[in-house]
Length: 277
Image (tube, rainbow, N blue to C red; front, side, top):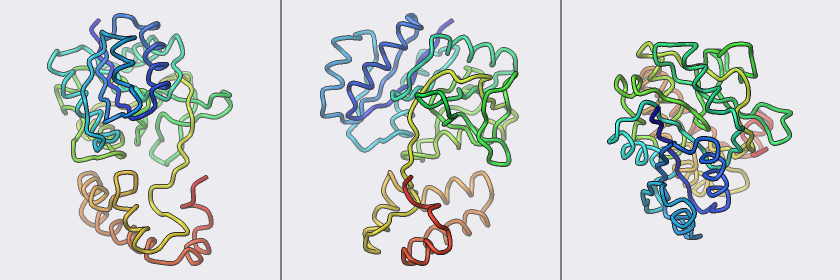
């Protein structure tokens, strides 16, 4: 079975090396395509030394997650694998992770996309995987659970899905690329499910992309439109693509309004909804 792992990284050498070590211990025959997005901490050099079999694609530091994954995946599809594994380098894989992904895909059949449930390091909380149509994060279950919004931490994509809908949309810069791919699959009649159990541990990202606090108006909008913000242009594209022009226009206005209004008023209306946790 030919499987390609798709990873992107930037300046966290130790985590990247640890991730590759666990991955290749568990699945030694897997081919790895790693986008190093302009790391200055010696990541590429260390990977070449310790894992010379890894295919490294160099970025300029401006790809971020979605475009880094797109570049790595674009390279991997040239070799026509049976499965493509998305992998974030900050997760700690469990020894059975690949077995669970493949069993869930086989159980659902018809080339389903499987998103792995990621729990906290202390194993007390589910962090990622995906949400159902009501926005509820899926926990473990006796069978794979259908999801609407997919998290891209650890995801298995069969070749049949790539043949039908292609790879990630390069329009997305940092976030939304995973959600977009899951929604695109659903719109083409492809099932998207979580695993039955957690297959890795990780850390919660509590950074709010929508709004910054305690800054000037110009600084708030600069961050909003940055790759690590919630760029209204990319959000407009995403929402028009999946939910229609009216939804896209409404959300465009919403993003700008909550960034124009002062901190005190936003806090009074929304509490700590848009604050870093």
